[in-house]
Length: 515
Image (cartoon, rainbow, N blue to C red):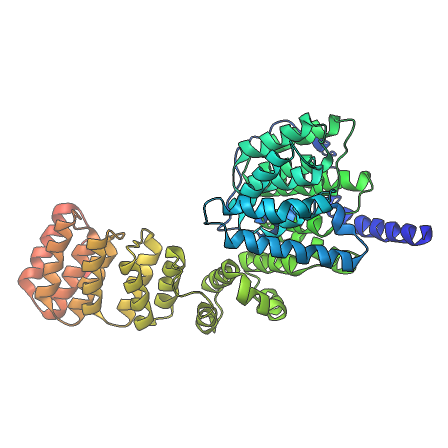
């Protein structure tokens, strides 16, 4: 048995040594400080992720699920299955009676209390909180009942307190999480798992400094010591803040303490590199996982897929997507949007077909203004006028307004290349009313297109539209008028325009002075 344990530790050490090269590429660089001595960081908030939402970084329940629960290591699978079955019945009764006055209390007193007494190690209650993960408010109410009952019946265990802290953190009630942690400490039930739970609550709610401060307190506690879960939380905190040096220093401390990195360790490292747009480090970490004892899971693959999308590496993105698309299509809608965004930024000849294939996977009711604007731009660049206008109509319906000059110029250019001046004129009127970015190019394009069709009166009316929008006539405006009158042979108006050019000091057309 000891030989087997030694072999496992040796394999883990080999995997750690393979990753260490990520942090030693610059031998002249001074060693980073020990994370236990870190001063307060200047970053005061976490970066949100809509643009870089990473699954493992933002999935608090996944993290707290790593906390040490005694029953989770029960070798008797039949007993474990029996426990889950009993707790499932209690959970169903709680959900059924949740909206019936004192129904929750009656169910807990009638079914819950005998069950909890029969599992005095807290395993039944911890399992119940786990099964109520999708109903955190109910789980918190159940936990509050358990706290009150503990004063008169079976005392609570550290694992139960850890779960309560985790639920409070998930409900974004950090004060309650701290209150539960303090209560456990006062009852001499403060353990590494309760420290980890509160650190996780701080991490999840963006309190990076409090999380680091609690870590230092844990290091000073003579009765507790950090575990790999503790360092996973720190790595996630530093990754969210793009403090890559701190993140890597924390990982080196894991190596120095001979702790075995687990799946969450590597996933949090990868997520941190993605947040910092360090694509090479992301891939190196992934390759170490593939070659080592800690194999990537679907979370890892989702993170790497997101990294490829953000970096515009379409070839690898498509290759990885083929392997995991069943899961992605069902569960990772934000990641599908990230892939669409990658195609929108690319020059792939078949990008429209690929974009629309992914669009069909998105829920119809979920509208994202930024995504719709990207589609407008893509369709405009590809001169797909009907699809462009459909997306423009969707934007108007949702009161979305475009403020980016580049997008507006793409729209104008598409109308110009399609010689659709009437459709452009209609769009300009709607854009003016909707508060979109109005630029002089809109009106100049209309003038050029009207002039090319010898619709001089409509071209001249655009000048009044410009005045209504407080836009002065520029050198380019006068040149458009001069060319239009030249084409139509209107010498009188052409000379008027030349006079205006003289008046404003603009360059005079050379064809006025033939050799």
